[in-house]
Length: 320
Ligand SMILES: [Zn+2]
Image (tube, rainbow, N blue to C red; front, side, top):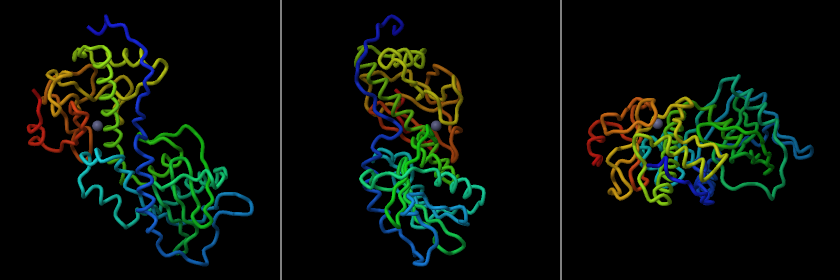
């Protein structure tokens, strides 16, 4: 039993589930978004103030047009099993998402104004979002949002934003500020954050299996992972058991009692269920209710994460 195992300190670094693969995707996105300029008014008003090194004043704006790059949905090819082509297209299509709420725009303007100028040598590659800021129909400024930096495109000035922000698994102040402006993406970001939990849990389970040469007892799998994590990475918060829509102390994932280290690659290892702790069993525990549109995520033994939308899809999975 795991309770009798002494846990060695591995010193191996856990993959960062929140931002894994982001840099590659950002590079790809630079190419995609570089053609999304729109029609810039040559007589546009305020842009970044090159002389003072201050961010542009966006308080007079009446509309923000936000275009997201593909990595706002996809960190890697694996993510394609999370979203349908139609869902991806709905976010990365050529039409921007519009923000016209004065309160939201005012809050965003205040945020942008709080940035600190950084050296041109520090400008990161590839926008996660490109934001065109309009006063009525006149373009005031075009911005690129990259992790914790905003780049003012007119003069290529960059401003950094600090703070321990996070939004559904995104770290970095800028995306934590931009994504809530567009609630249309909330459901997709929730699904993405949930998948990151499962990828992280997969890594921890496999690491535990490999080091301890034993299976994790399904009846205590949540407790076992916490003990294991505390042994190999003391002091590091382990949040992967908590669903992005869940509360601390609850776990919306269950372990398939039939899955072991040597089980087939396509066997279900973990799957979504209702709130609980140390839940284990089979497809009868699966729930479609944690996400909207309805569906739930499963983690297969080879690390694949899939979004399951129908009972038929659920039956097609290997459970034993
Ligand atoms: Zn979920």
